[in-house]
Image (cartoon, rainbow, N blue to C red):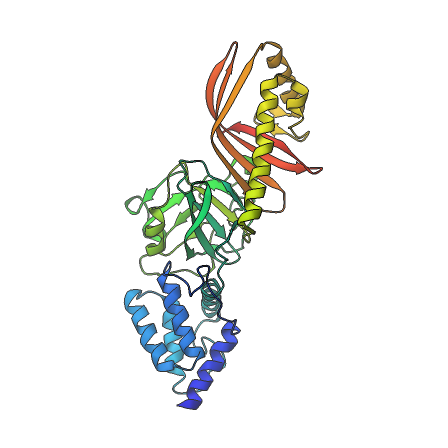
Length: 398
């Protein structure tokens, strides 16, 4: 029996590279945010310590809770197979399809890395610079780690709530066109709640569409549609990390839990190739600096000094009406008829856009008053860094 346990341990060591167990954000082992990952981690820990009988009992208990969990079935098969012969690798069955085994190995590694390597509690995703008061939660997706994180708006500071394993596009991230089987990267919002009754079984317990392509995607010529957060078919617990045509896919149990945090039209969904983390001090400093830039733009608009106002706009500016030249001409014409202007901003959100370009997405409710016009509008701006200074490159209705 000792020889069989050693063989099993060697097989799993090859599969998981024995990356070390580390402390979680709370200082102990991971909390029960996703108990399938926790249970799976305990099974693997038993295997690593050659407690194979305990591992088998735990994987059997896991399968009682999640009978369609294919990865757990594979681990159980390995545990039984190791009683008859040494294993050379995880999923060491010559009859099993190689492609399916590779998918399950990828899922195992993604789940275990997330379970064992937690972001520190005093770090937050760089993207969540400011949520408006009505936005109770924000979603951040890390496609490389196959992970979705939920953060609560705790009086303006993002506070970690939970995280879940996800599947994403078959060909990775950075979607640019219809049918490219990639998941988009950017700042999006939940636009609808589609219940199970209105969908085929493929989408599981429901779906939450997001607004891809957003304003910036359209400016960049990106197209496609139908990017959703959704569940899995009734005969499937989870899908491999790269399994969708571009959607973000959760288990039905996790989607049901997630649905309690989502607000249609409000909840931001920020999708990144890999999350950048900031200490709370650096996060506060970056947030303060960006809010200072936005306030300077607002004051310069109120000043009716058109040159100062236009200095906040990139020469590459473009919106649905035209380019920078047309925008500047229109603003000069409007300003000529004003004797006073007052602009108030409320419900302000500021999110850093993931990706190669230094960009922030600013959304607000604008209360504009002047001697001959008053209105309240919801607007969205995209700011980019040019020559060390933030400039507005797109502005339009949200």
